[in-house]
Length: 240
Ligand SMILES: [Zn+2]
Image (cartoon, rainbow, N blue to C red; front, side, top):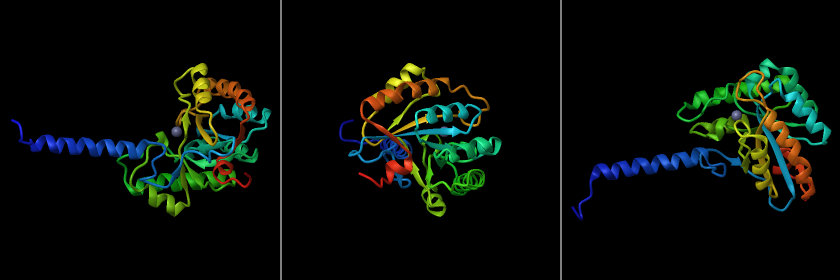
């Protein structure tokens, strides 16, 4: 009937709209509503930051060697449980000059979790990573890029800021060619690439697609005039 509004449909619409807003707020890399965050550096410098999540894993050594061969320092968002399992690799990443970030202890989805749970995952990872590497992280990457209520206060208490990405490589499921081409498409000044040297808490993950894609894009990006920086450098540049 024209002119009459069905309250149930209005309520459903409000719920759907609220759910869509929460999905956007929790997942969009550029959204800062749930906690302060960055997703890219300034557009005036021809710099790109390579970031690697979910490590360390048994495969991290190959990535460290590849980056060393090219003289590149990157950023590793480590999981506390993996650091506990492989403390020497976590330490070696830091010793080679890479920036070390916090990626929680157990890689949980933070959505719908309590503020205490979120804080304890972050605080415990901070302690484990600092003990193993000697570096106290200042950057946090939420698992799956998902943020939730409670993250803001946890970040404040732990002096952490979230870092998302401008391009995610989908290297956990795509073949080398697709990952490399996605990265090249996302190559812009200040880009932050999200890749993985682990697969959540899995032991001995196969990261061949990641390694091959990184090896392939490094010379192509340098040919285009890009240089590589850590997250510290790309977000807090000391030179212009
Ligand atoms: Zn992750």
